[in-house]
Figure: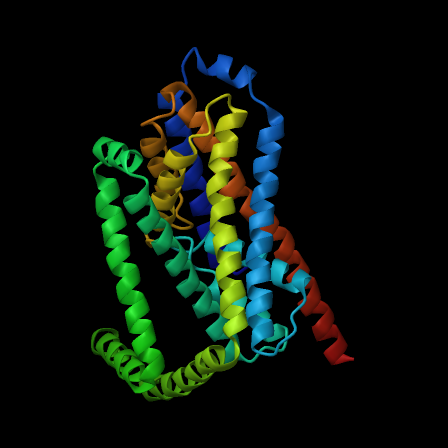
Length: 346
């Protein structure tokens, strides 16, 4: 990573640690030790393994979607790019910041930039569809569970409805731009000119030409998906569902490991809200937002004396483990680039 990225990684970790320390300070009491003494490490290990499995589902999504466009990318490479993506996502606002890494690594696997971009953007579309469907299920079919949570924390309903509107608008704009690439070009050119009037971009004409070229490449990749990559969309939807379902179940496993009921339904709703909050670009890697959101929502049905320990374990798996795995995968990438450069020099 660049020096600036290391700085933001330190900021992200520091902010997360500070918020976790505050959560523990206000939630730990004399009964917390009793709860911790009854911890079942089997479920904690199972939760960590399930998270790794969910990253495997993500890698399979990329592999199958790439294969549907005619590119063979081995699973090991896909898994490594997913892990590297998680490290970059930890230093960018929200957790949706690793797209350039995935595009670059697909390009290194001989997938053209336009098709690699189409794969990565389609991933986000599938994420939106699955999360939107989960949200619809939560509000329409969970009945009293949704009502009880919404009454305990009125912001849940607002977040879910706002997310529904945002996801729907995003999908509609996306579909329209696929059928009308000139519309997308006009929007991007307008945005570039608007920015130029305020900050005076260098080489604006070159940027506008690049926009036209890349929109054409991107549109060709998406058209190829629709015409020839339908199987990739089906498998992508399946693996996207498995990914998010696995990630949501992790919290219930941690609760069981701490001697609590799994609260599958309540936890499902809370995890859905947190997943949407984490996509809002507020802090690097969503640090602080995740901890405070989880503490506020889980305290509605989890004993206050243990909610801080639960949030700590949850973030250790879904945030700090991501950073560790991302650092290891980055070392693999650095070694590969070094060997490739040495081979070229010879």
